[in-house]
Image 1 (cartoon, rainbow, N blue to C red):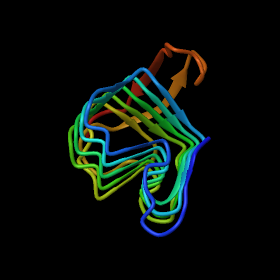
Image 2: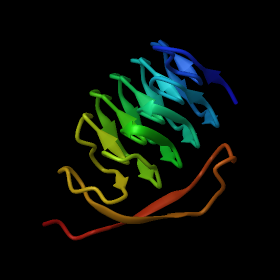
Image 3: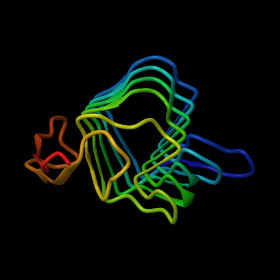
Length: 153
């Protein structure tokens, strides 16, 4: 677990990484400002488990404007908003975004509209899905998750 403390401290797990971030477990990090797990990472973020991170804003990811795909983003929290993702404006696709906490936008706040994703309580457009079924462990390198699709409105 990592910690970034003080004013304007971001990205306790990863900060300002523009390369590919793939097949990692990014957990238990805390930033006093934004992006407990990742902040300002603009490359492709794919195939990761991003869990149990916290920050004032964007508990899991903050201001990550690259492609965010095929990730499990769960159990993150934010004091102000964007429990999972805050201000992430790149493409968000094929992700499980579930069980995150924050007073405003517990899953996403001020972020792109995700496609082909399972998002708890989501009504913000794009695809809608019901609860994911986890057939693996968050600590395993490969996790198989399926979502039951809700009927399109």
